Length: 97
Image 1 (cartoon, helix red, strand yellow):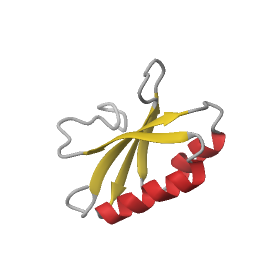
Image 2 (cartoon, one colour; image 1 turned 135 degrees about the vertical axis):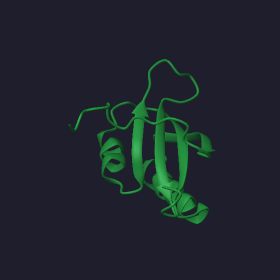
Image 3 (spheres, rainbow, N blue to C red; image 1 turned 45 degrees about the vertical axis):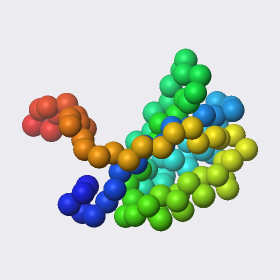
Image 4 (cartoon, rainbow, N blue to C red; image 1 turned 180 degrees about the vertical axis):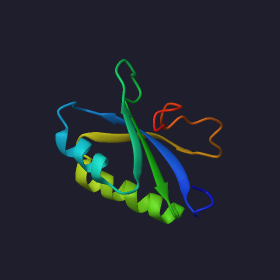
């Protein structure tokens, strides 16, 4: 992704409700979101969202849009810049043989 000019970030979000089909649909269809994981048992956050952006300005726009649409049920807890992917298994070895 770096060779294509993208930056990668992970947002950790806290939801006030788990009945959030609109939020999940938004994340599933958003072109900049490349993963999102839901967790149980975390007090501080319960949703990780990975996004690719061209710049920190695009990241800011994404966060503002997310807050405008879902600010009543979401709180941004943490945000991380992904410096390096040391290992990533998108699909199991041999899956497409």
